[in-house]
Image 1 (cartoon, rainbow, N blue to C red):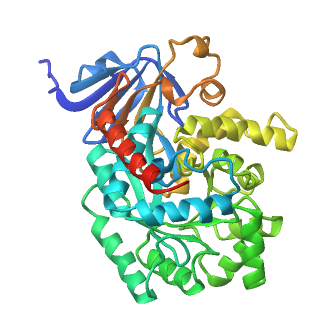
Image 2: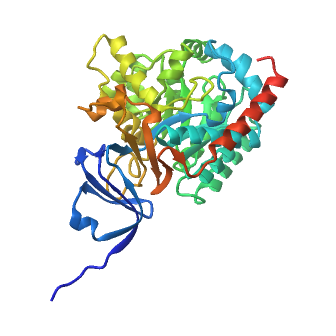
Image 3: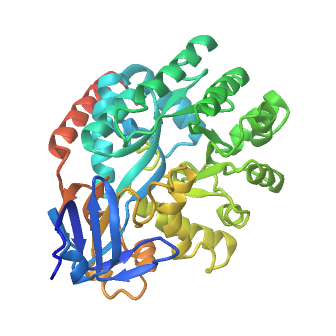
Length: 449
């Protein structure tokens, strides 16, 4: 007697092409079969016709002629700052921030502009292969709402600032805001993982840093902070507190494995020891660093010390785009030049930083960053049928040295197709662009910047 197995209905099957799984076990898989259901990867292995016959998909994606890889992870953004893209270029960071960006934010940033800017920024990221980002800004609930509406994975960081365009109130109020934000965004969507952020050691009081970090620890939430971004920051912290930013934060007790330190451009060997001992996570933002001439983190050394380092774009006002492929290219090339060694920051290392390494930096590697059964189905497909991507000997090399965000053809987040054949399915990009253009016209009329 022949037993016929029931056919199981699933949400999505991806078939064909080449899969760069970023899994140590599976590596590169030719002609893969990827089965997705309820947002998770059920199966990922070389094509097996018998296996495929056991499933009936609601949707399919053909990956023929495509490279499949995990969605890219952007470890540091300020999404609403797309509204200020190109507004105050070619300036040093402190002048750019204090004389231009802070005044503009004080005048024009509100819940509506934050939501509109976030929608446009998310559209830009999906189109260029990013499926997860860690964001910190004002009115961060509006950023989270934009992510939910777009089907985008987000770590929204409620930000705190004692000196700047929108300084916080008393400490008790700040702590109430922090707890309320975490409570509000834990649960409404599996795509949202709320976190907290203090802008920097020179813009937040010591008691603010300690109080917000205390809540982050109690709630097991990520704590983000800009750290040692410029030489001027180091000098200011040293003049005020008698030590460097890293040592100051260590003294305050805010450095640990739940801390994401952004930039870390001006750190010495002793400070690297501190970061390693505390298991601090690092976000490397090479394009923004270069454009602002802020400096550049010693990433090869950080990686050798075993620190988790991810890539970030920073905000579009200091980059001026959110294409993580550009960060991959710059990260690989800059450090080779700086070290005088073409073998450092090789293509595989940089691809790790953009995927599973970024996931580790955000403490999400159990859920995303590689193509493995049980993980969330956050996947992107690159169209290889282009002159600049022909031929392909090494897919890692292709991603870092030849590809760009415009080569991404399809994006899947949590098992949902959010872009198919370069068409966004969850965002009206034309409407988003027009809304931000209207905001820019208002800014242009009311400021001389």
